[in-house]
Figure (cartoon, rainbow, N blue to C red):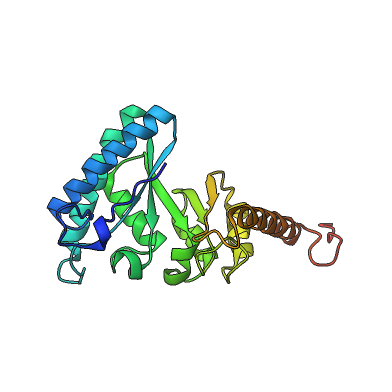
Length: 229
């Protein structure tokens, strides 16, 4: 179950446009998120996704104001979601789609911590992270302990394995941190067709998981473990 704080046709002058950086459009985002939370609660869905969009350019001069508006909006969303048993996941997005604002796991974590809420975490989408993060390993580490959900989408927006994201680094990081959150394969478009994209993505990630399990074992890389004594 997901909701984006983006707006109609990405037009910041549309009366329906929703952001997290300007009060009126942030109010619209809160209102729509509440509707998504209602649907999620009815369906028994555990999460609603919130993604940040900007109204005007965020700069050093207005970042404090924009951040305060975003924190207030996120706090109101969390307050509404909590009694309904729904959690929010705040998706880190790239600046070409959502504007230059938070964009990284570390900055999303800073905003989340400012809300003071315990029912909001981070969602990493590896397509977006490929633009903004130092690397996939750092992104997973920076998101801890708030990494609750991931979109396994490759650098070209296709299913894992069709692009250049280092998913072995992702899997190493989540294994080392003991991550137990959720993940979803995402491909836009689903090429060459949906069944093939889903199959290839699943099989590719399972192969990488087997490789990573060996890479993190004492037997790597020689095939035997060095005795401790």
